Length: 86
Image (cartoon, rainbow, N blue to C red):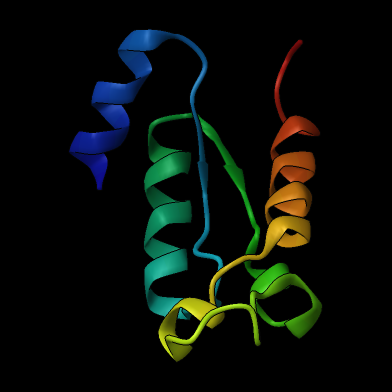
């Protein structure tokens, strides 16, 4: 994780997000790496816990249905935009 973050910093301001689906072990490691590299961490896991932001019933494959739908993607984008300099 640290290597990915360090590499991305070469291209200007960096932001990293949590997972869409809350996972304490992974999210805490992402957050820690962001802190060590002094980049912004945006928690988007709150959207993964809410079915209104998932593509439930929109696809035949159930695994895909657990991913963000259009509203979920919009909310993720809004959350990221709150944390960047325009």
